[in-house]
Image (cartoon, rainbow, N blue to C red; front, side, top):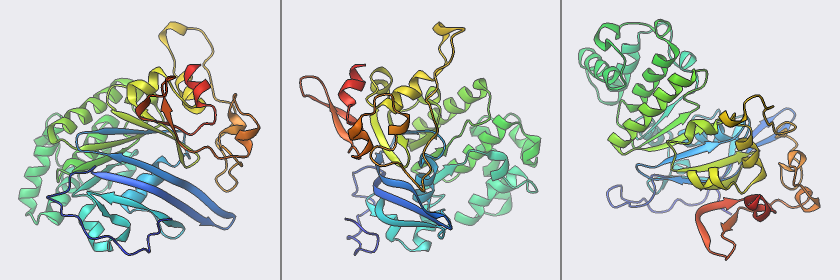
Length: 350
């Protein structure tokens, strides 16, 4: 078992490193409350490379955002605690770094786009000042130089009349424009990796598409890794390379994006797909997964999804399923595919 108190491995040279940008290994996050310990993340593993997009899907409370906050090092500790796991950025475990070392990575090498732009931006400071702050703090630029760079960024994320609007305040922008400002802040220092936490929440579908297209264009231009956190399968279909589906703090399915849409191998994933509105089913009642996500203070025994699963049997209520490699009927392994379901074979055929 890996613990964060173990002796750290020898540092890997940044220039010689050839592996994924980010690897999360057996990550556990707990919240210690008056009512007990809420195990929000339970052994999460995933990775993302340069130029690659990983979509992390799941309902609210599944652990998607908590995992991202652990990566960024912005969890409130206490009540949060990371009892074990590794978060490797270019081969170096950030959980074993000092606060100063992590601060140098956060914002400059890994940036995050938060889901609520209005609450993330300071209402009493102009957007130009807030964009320029990145350059003043990290690069030591003057106020004039930082303002010029802020205008360039606003142009880059396609905000009309950037030079005229650089002194405007957040409330003077629409929701879509505020989200573009958040993207500009994340891009300011040209990071290696961006984590976008529900970047299209509360936006209409047309603006959602514009924001996702913008992110995809910028990712290709800068060859960044992108982790896209969302509960909306429709948002990621055209932008993600691979998907990790989370439920009750665990990854229950992994797959390349088109494989997951064609042949889901977990009942939870199938339920999420079936709940998407379809044009060929006008007038029909939308499917909904029965029940509610579990209380993380009292996660059900066995598979956490078993109280809501139409395929649950006795083994599901007693044994926690590992993430099985998903194979073809002839036994050939499907690269990148895994399912934490005792009956994944029946599910993928169904």
